[in-house]
Image 1 (cartoon, rainbow, N blue to C red):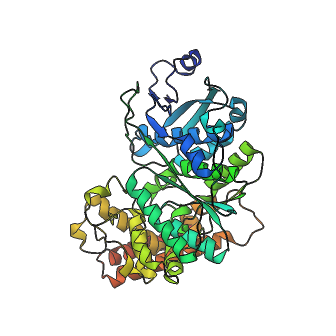
Image 2 (image 1 turned 90 degrees about the vertical axis):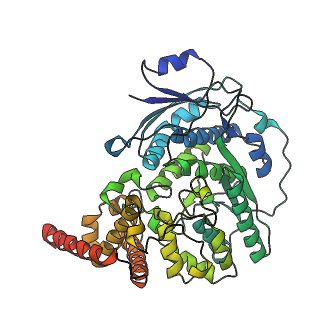
Image 3 (image 1 turned 120 degrees about the horizontal axis):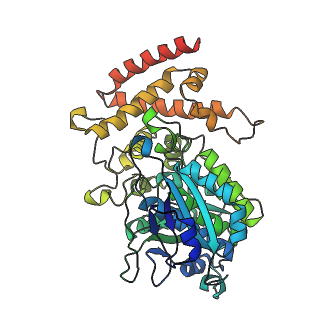
Length: 476
């Protein structure tokens, strides 16, 4: 049975035909007067300095509905993690969206792990809107040559420096924010980049979130915290920015450990580990926007084969390293970290642990933020969930440190999935992927040993026993 997400408040006959009896339904709307979601298309168009065409308006609205619909429907536990979601969306170009429906659902299925379907119906309020017809002043920045996501995290900060300094690019930066705290972080980091390189960059910040609205007939209630579909929102707005400025290259900058999505435990397989920058997701998204706009884009992650520690080393070689403290990595930011007075990082979620290891490995611990929980301290001070995160990662790193490439392929078949759709004539990419994880594993184990962490030795022993079992069962 599907849960219906009806992206409209109108009671249209086709909606009744699309929703079966007893199926649940949630209602979303970006209507400026009565909607429960906030997306100001006119402001986005103004900041881009370009009028939004009807296809781009549709893409922005669909991305907003997918992002907030994902957070409105609670996941179950264990085998009930996967949801059946049916989106009913009014669009200005129904024939076009029906023609790309399969690639759209494949893109989101890879990203969120859900069973998703779309029903597109004609938008009643006309083909165009104010955002596509209002006059827009040209933005006074020099020409950009690519579009790049800029989240306010360490990876996107390092990515901006890499593209400008190492590749000689002039990115148009696209940033999503929900509240003022993240907007401030993004603004401060961009100001530091502009000061370092002595030039101004086109930086577009857009806000998409739920909206308390007494006039809305349906109240929005957030029930899910995993937000696996968030990357689709980020990528869609960056693609629209690229389309309107006639740019072909779109960059998302994320280290290989977090983007390649090799699960660190059996409980984290599939979409239980984030796939926000997974190569297969990026491939599908690239195909989607190529089909939508009938032109070729190149969606790329320049850090696919980098560890976060290597990104820290890149920043450490510039004058920007003091700003590392102000980048935000924690999965719980800002909602869960508001209760922490002196930190934006919980210290025990997977991104926080990877960040902390990488900052120490890159020699920049002095310039790091504080962590509320010290996972390398006394294990008795950790909750079960906190201990499980760092133990799982320690076990995973020890496996990568002692197993060969062939043994790792046997233990982690997900390494092969990363290669789906890749150019088979390219250099040995699996070897490069293994190198990324082995390098991070060495960084993690060195940090744990230097902190004399009590979790390392028993995990090492357990991983060694497993390695012997792999060798015996595989005949290696």
